[in-house]
Image (cartoon, rainbow, N blue to C red; front, side):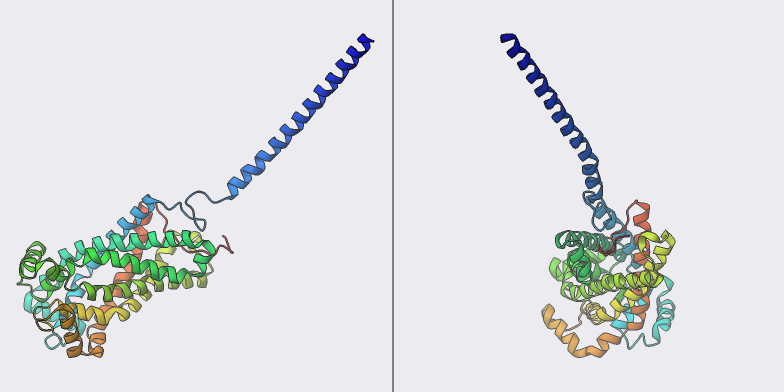
Length: 360
């Protein structure tokens, strides 16, 4: 009987062991089968830092955008210095420079020499490199961060508002750094005898007016000029580029570098003209408030009010407008074109809004 029980026990244990091994084998097969599915899920999920199928967007990308922005703004504003000199002279002294845009070039060259058309080149190039760094870098930063915060679909639905908010925030920061350069540029253009260069002009302005009075007297007009200008520039350019791509039945990822550059240039011209018209009254006010004696001897707001009352809105909005449209249309197209070129040179691709419902 004992032998029988022993045999039965051995048989039972053997059967139980076989059952356990079979159970473990099945569990192992299920686990192995689950691995590819898990891998597919990981592969299907967006990579860390990517949004709308683009990226990743981290510190390196934002620094690349800032560098490209500084270069594009410095080059384009510097190249447009002769146009800016003529435009500023027409705004400041329309009675003298009354022969139109082309006539203004002739008048300045005849009276002061062709070199006068490059007056203010140094503060222009320096100031707008710094401004472009914070403006273009800031717009890219705020666009990406707002898209991450809102979520892809909500960001796509509200992309125009994101353009406007990103541009306003970036421009406000950029203007803090730009403001000291603008009065130097305008003073040198309006009065070439005031100082021999950027350093001398800055030193004299501070000695005569103090840091705030010398460098930030025009800060409020700069904000009124630059923030609407930049909001219009980026929002209109984004919308214009989107319409151009839609009209061609294409998108940035499907276009060649040359094709994308042409879209940037075309949409930049449209954006530049729109931005110039919107911001021109404040630009005229800024040019005049930085002219010695303009608006009386009171405080900044009092001077601005006096200038606005003396000139009238129509004059502020139209005097020198054609020259500024030429300047800003060309400049803005150049900025977006150079920005794309530099981004390509440093190995970065600019973030574009795409519809998550229609991935490509």
